[in-house]
Amino acid sequence: MTPETQSSTGGPPEALAAHGTFTPETAAAPGRTPEADAPDKLPRDVVVIISVLLVSTFTVFLNETIMNVALPRLMTALDVSESTVQWLSTGFMLTMAVVIPATGFILERLSTRQAYFLAMGLFTTGTVIAAVAPGFGVLLLGRVVQASGTAIMMPLLMTTILTLVPMNKRGMVMGNITIAMSVAPALGPTVSGLILEHFEWRFMFIFVLPVALLALLVGAKFLINVGETGHQRLDALSVFLTIPAFGGVVYGLSQLGGSHSGQAGPSSNAIVALAVGVVSLGLFVWRQLSLQRTGAPLLDLRAFQHRMFTVSVLLLVVAMVALFGTVILLPLFLQKVLGAEPLVTGLVMLPGGLAMGLSGPFIGRMYDKIGPRPLTVTGSALMVICLWQFAMMNGSTPIWWVTVIQTVLNFALAMLFTPAFTNGLNPLPPQLYSHGSAILGTLQQVAGAAGTALLVALFAAGTAIHGDLLDGTRIAFLTAAGIAVLAVVLSAMMRKTEGAGGH
Image (tube, rainbow, N blue to C red; front, side):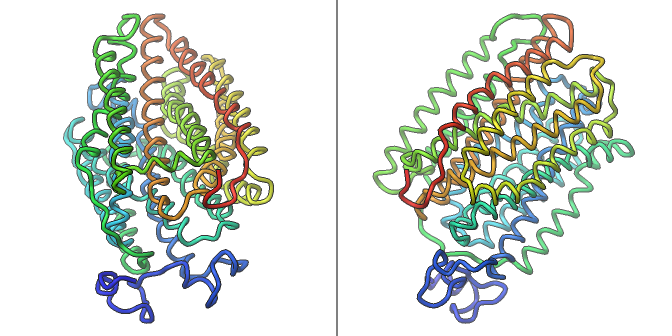
């Protein structure tokens, strides 16, 4: 422990209390590593730390999907188009993609408690802004501030787990994390539907606010610091480049359908934005490679030297492109084609999210026993089948069948996410934990934003050109199914990683 850490925590290591600093060594017997000690149950301090972060992650993830069911209502209330309103979701994910690369620096320079209060403070502030927003612009600003806080939470949770949890229990813990990562987004549409049934749209944020404040109080009482702070420098040029790099790509994808009024082919705005995005991405990568020689990259790309990390990242990217586009498209289909009410739409989405979250611990234990490949191959194949089934829907498709497909799809995704996260991060050495988590989070959000923008653009363009919502839906879902085929190929390349230094 450094002197700085002692002063910030109020005492030396032997005086650890609610505001002390916890390290992996405190969980093991004297003279033994956490791997060698490896009790059947995690130490109480570890459980408390992870539980506090899980409660907060649940809160911010609930908010991430609470807008999806509300988008058709917001189009009318705020007098905006489909391609505009989807930025309430795309902008949220894009902001996360811009902020997450800096979390390696944030987690290095700030203590666990400082990073936690920064994250939840931003999230709470954004919730207040969104709740009082008089129009679309301020509402989007509130979502951006919310996303800035949300971006810090996930890398903080993942890095803490990698630091404190022994290798042979990471699959189990990652599986439990799936409950927060999956059940919360699944509850979002249902909560949104219940609120919209009785209140106006801004109550989606008014009702989230006390939950966020409660999470802050819980963290203040129970959260302790993990590890030590460092002295990493923040590269301003790298931060600046993330904006045109990720923003250009996502904006360009969102404009691929032109004006969505019958224009075929990409617009000039789309071409320019994509060109700027690709060039900026190239410059960003070049900058990180240059900074690696001085030891201060914003994102340390040496994580990609580990083959299973690279394969896992690609698998997650493909899955997120398909998933987030579907999460946006399905409520539009249910409400505009099948005429479902917002509450019904939320209830249709609920079983799938519950299936994903509640199966997480089982899938995590299966990963620890049999490795990733049987799980990921099965999950990716099911994902392709479900997306193809979505493409075959029409105006007479029963809502119960949509629910069944959605539930199977989410179970399939659980078979991808838990193994990919665990298998990708396991081989990294400790100094790359925060960077590996940041890379995964960044590309996950960029892929989700790109998938949303691309599939919504195809949906809008197909609808405008053919004059039929079903045609737009079919084109978008068939595209998602085609993208998902790549996940089958990547899944077959997976093999279980054994620890730092593995390739």
